[in-house]
Length: 405
Ligand SMILES: *Cc1c(COP(=O)(O)O)cnc(C)c1O
Image (tube, rainbow, N blue to C red; front, top):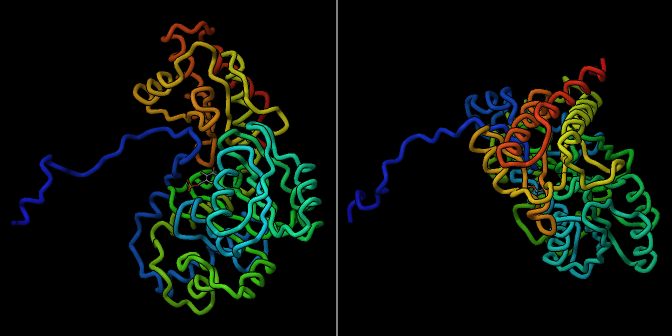
């Protein structure tokens, strides 16, 4: 056999992706500053210049998580790896773990607990509802030997936000550690790791941080560090064992795995952007764009899934109007407008759309463009909606609600 026999039959050349506008549940539009940061020269993962940047990166992550935890760093892997990392380090077989499920990602937490040999105690809430703290309290009263409470702060599958502070308080009262998913909340809505007394937290680069997918910022309290240090049984994953990873992200700087250096430049740049903007201003921007989108959707007769007080500004889940082929709407938005919006998952498949306004995607241009595109597609498909009302309502909102200084 010659090398020629393995040549692909089709002629393959450089891949040029189309320029889309990403308004689904993630990834969001990568900030151009992040893309150019990632195109800079690759450094060795132990290069002193690179390790200096790693220190800044840890500092910036402490700022966005609002924590002083020393053990704060990005994991090389998507949000799912950050999730798994928390569970695999903190659970030993036989541990009881309270898991709150009100959507897809709570379900994945249960999977994680089971695969680590733990026993999940599931607190169920309806899709679209926040986690009910009273149910968490009841579960802990019934199970005084539970060790951990795990919950999703911003459930991306439904667009609901849960009351993290209250859940964490209840967990602490019952002597439990907490694991919180902030993949969609971080950067878009307030997260106060220390003030809320959260023990383990993970996030993702591609939602409100405006980076490409592939990195998962995590942070662990001293309690978690002690727990892992006192394990008698090795962590059931070599790659995700935080005590080994600390050899690289900690002071000794020894090789653990080859960190994705260019991706980390991107995360560094995205955090610099967030730091320059300021967390409060970023939260306010996400809120303002959500309100404008909401005003526009209302004129189209489109209704939200989640009750007003629990809505995530960065993830707008709405019911598909009756009789509308939701898949066809998404196809037309993508084909004619290069606009991606999200479909429903699980119980919500075929019933809802999810409009993401995350990170760099959360801006006036996107809100107005999306409303116009959606309105026109609906009209083309014979849906009775008023022409020109949606984006006008958004403009009206912007005009009467200026950006905070
Ligand atoms: C997207 C998401 C994840 C998973 O992140 P990946 O980067 O896709 O692995 C986990 N939890 C929530 C709440 C998410 O929105």
